[in-house]
Length: 432
Image 1: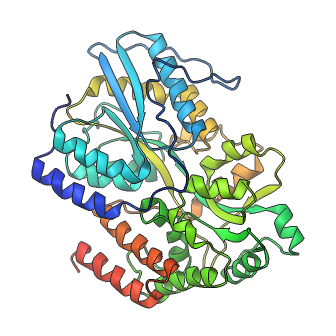
Image 2: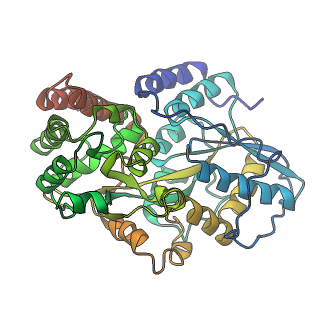
Image 3: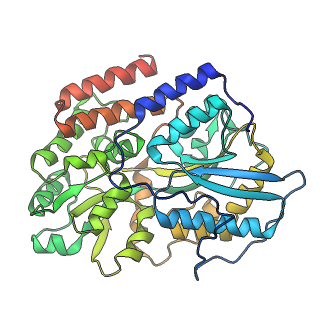
């Protein structure tokens, strides 16, 4: 039983917000948990990095449980692999992992906080970090972990009031994936603007094939995929009821009205969207760095490539990635010991390479992706990638944004009305 880290009242408030933000269920069944990594080893691969010996520090002992939401089997196997290595090299700290679906992750954290039943480490979406740190769930590890070589942006997502409440796991961003054969058959070039994207998406929509889609869940995953449209107009995340914000919603509507964007995408995770793409049901999609290993493994003969997201006024992408956070009142010493191992160079490179992330540690990132043109597009796009938040109220703001584009996609609201409703909520949260 973990130490209770929140008052019941605060946890109940957090649960209410989390429930409001839960989106539609994923279009594919959730994978079995990759837990019990200490009981059933994930298959080792020839590409595994050289083993770095783990030696638990004095005082670090006991069980450590990790919660994560990755649905991709390769991600789960990579995490299990390094857990197996860590557990096999010392006998003082035993780590195991548990899968919690993305849509349920916030709810599970809130319920666990109220009941005093939390893991020791969570791997969570970086925009959510500040809200939980502000509520006292995460341990202050400022003097326990060195992040001096990490990129400032990812570190900022783990920082609140000058104190460090986590460790960046890895960074990523979004670009346009396209099926080269489908575009060629339709006589189309790779789109670079919104008008071109609408045109190409319409021309490649044939039979059971849609021209374009992105994850449009009513949660943070959907917000992540929608916001590049807003940023491309020159507006910020907090200016939805603006010329640019309304224009972004109108663009989504134009894709749906043309029959080129499936309304079913409101139920698709990013993994579901990728599965539709590799199954030949989509000509183009927005997705992230982490999908590359799976696509190269599952469809090695498919002709696909990537390009920057088509733009309105300016180029834009979303800065994504996860952070590690140590739970306050749990096995903090054991958790820190595992994180030191997991973020060491060889182990980190193994995770990044197998999961398609860009290391948040600048000294490690420089050794990645040399000579790989697909990954290089993502690296180049990092300069245009905007962060969501970070601020403690971001989850509620994200909920308002995702509700707006969901209503537009389903036809429940017109763009101007959806934007006005979202802005009212955002302004109230920001105290305007």
